[in-house]
Length: 241
Image 1: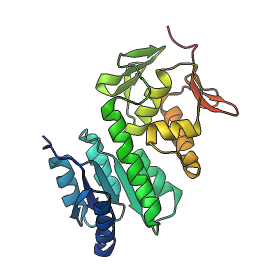
Image 2: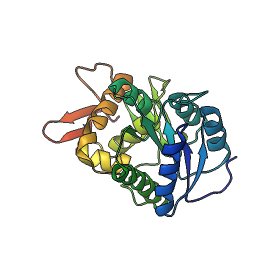
Image 3: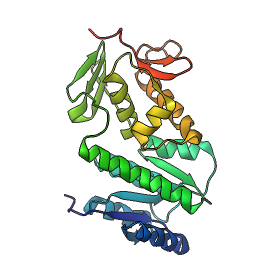
Image 4: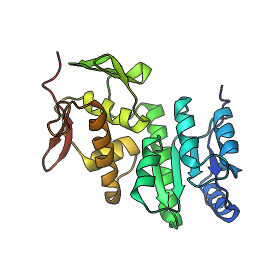
């Protein structure tokens, strides 16, 4: 069981100079930090203590960042994760998000951008704790063969459990709680990821595509998650029975 701890960030980064720089700027924000230099220690620390945020490098000795992220989410540790990567390939970013990372930055990055992402993730956590995010249903919702059980963080299709990443579940839960309501990509980005940043709108598209791939019987003719042309996405209001 995780012990109580607040206003603390876990930095899992093997480059000492980068870790020290991040810790220094986090301190200026009033945040304490714990630093570890390999994946195994990062996993152990995140499992044992309650952090407000985990800053996780992709390339680490021992376990890499994607595996650390996967194991944490499998263990129901939902601490926000900001993944750092020196790679620029889209597949690495998408894979990190698929494993449950909340956001990513590609090295080299500017400190102002780093701090903006940190503030956004922490602000979203605070809003979740205060219950100030848009109202979503806490009851089980059935849409034809699709069953969403928020209390269990569970989604089933034709009686078979569908494995979703945390962000995929949040996205589905948000849309399904308001069938027929259209959300722009910018609104979704702000509500689910906690910030409004035009350059990250493709993140929403990527999550929608992966979500559709998991729950839609026909990707070319979606039954659940529909595109509202010129606006964004909505959950169909015609499948509930």
